[in-house]
Image 1 (cartoon, one colour):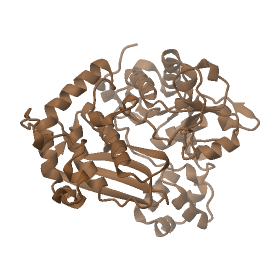
Image 2 (cartoon, helix red, strand yellow):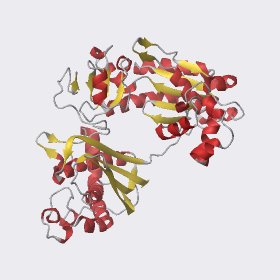
Image 3 (tube, one colour):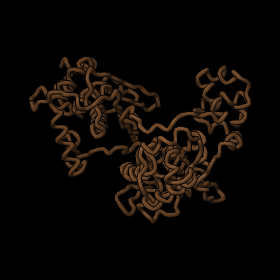
Length: 477
């Protein structure tokens, strides 16, 4: 099948838009079943199996018991005692997502990725070559099944709102009585938009979360049709002008937003919830350095550098604090990011114990900044991950973390210049021999080099006593 190029879109400028929303069915869980066929037909839950874990995804067999994504794993275990918990393997989902998006881009260049497993596609200009919207939707489903051996649901409409709601209507449904196969493809013609939209619950609208939902409940509205029937100005008075106007337009089916094929990342980072609260600053330094290494590697892999470093800490009492610093110039070397991140973290009082720790990088710029790099790895450019007098001697003038933070720009710039070339060499070695082939000495433990993969442990900790099954993926029954 020939690929559709941007030039093929020109003849569609005067045509009515045809937008698809493609959403994989239980994507993470389906990948796990694909890799381990013994899980077929079983209630599989992907996520953190420990007491503080959350559900990332689950099979429809688990949904029959009321399990759903973002649910605490402890609740999911009570609802479905026979569930198989599988730790998420983010790298595998990324691999399958790349195949999925390759299918999308073979159909149209106008692809707006929403997440690893869903995207909007504007196929208006693809119809002359591939057929109408429903035909293209069926074609995509067939390709996805043939090439990924996974299933997806597709909504077809003239707007993003309608296409997304249609794809949800196309999905399989699970309840106590069993699993009902979905239609696979649901089409919402223009003349049927309001009859499709208005009976739906108000929380189906974009922008209606728990807080907005409660405000709408106070107005006595239950469906989108109820929202559309409200007198002019009521929504603006209740929700504010911007949100009120937005929701009123959506309730009328008015959604002119285009499919945006180019989207820039706003931040790159990692966070982890610990099995128990941690108080020891040295232990937390080790965790933070692993997150810095993973985030910085991802940053460089995207061809970016960051000016802002943000450290997030959630305490044992569920309160949260953040520390942020913006530098004068962007950085991408792990050691430079670590200099800022550790200085930020050391301004935090750990008296309440740390439940969650995270780092994010933002304020992106091109990583090729023309900085003159040197190979001077003398004492002044020593890696910040190693123990120094400033950390071990309270009388040392640099022991004060706020004083170190004041010098963060100078420290980061110096380390960036000294370690930029070394970082490039480390990336090249990892690309050839694997992520655990080389790394900072501070990340070496009794079990070897502990490199954190992208997305690792993002859904919470694993149960410590979970049995091991057929491979090296920890699971609990």
